[in-house]
Image (cartoon, protein in one colour):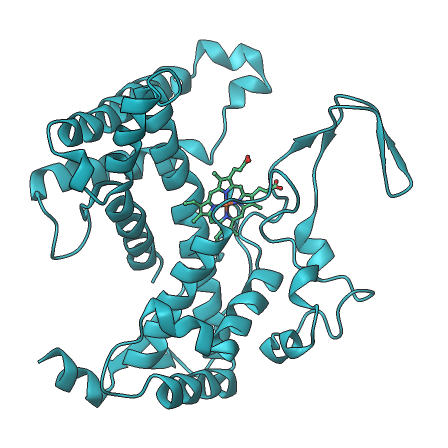
Length: 324
Ligand code: HEM
């Protein structure tokens, strides 16, 4: 499932930014899509591993990491500049992509909305928004396969509120509280970035009973906070119903808190909710064998499953009718 979910979230973000798809059958330009897919795979392979030279400087003599990453940076910059230049050749005022809007802003505020800033915005949306949403979907589906009762309840909610005459759409999400609670429970047990991102104290301060001198790096262990038995009942169990209690969702830290919290949290919850809702509405899902889906965590910036999810699915009969 993981590669398909990654393709989905990457297409989603890139369609918002550029209007183009790079994965699947409806790609606009297959040659360009192939180049972009290779670039994305190379960036993925080189970002989560880190640079051993940072810890053991002598390794510089043997390592090609820095050279490789520099070349990758140049290729990425060329690709992003190409996206902006393509759009600049078109009529932005009628365009609906994010790059169109940013180029309109560039005309009125040239100093702030430079190409560099626009490239940075595209890049951070791809880096921060694709893998995080894809792993959350993979954990959500894994939990549903291990809890068929929850899956049936979610399907019943969608069938009742959306029906079988059309596909679920974004505007339905506010009417599907159980589906929302499944997403929240997944974010509680499997926060995609379990240590958030490192923060630094800009002034001397106290966190709980600890003194934090200015300049201290602070890591927040959201994973542990989300499983703290003093805060949650039966914290290790997957129980979306817990979020029916008022105020429970406010205890989550999967998107951080405060000024530097994730600005994509609303978008992420819509992407994950709609994708998961569509998978539940359109397909019958089963585990590959009788055994439960393995829920061990692997290693990575955004916590992957140790064993990638494989599942069996069959289109529900109504789908043929509405797609024909
Ligand atoms: C399930 C999906 C996602 C999760 C779990 C997630 C989680 C996080 C977390 C924990 C942080 C750091 C917050 C902190 O340290 O206090 C963060 C930062 C950020 N996220 Fe997300 N995120 C997700 C999706 C997205 C999406 C879809 C976008 C945009 C397209 C996005 C854009 C960003 C950006 C730009 C930052 C940096 C904000 C800053 O430093 O001020 N994220 N995210």
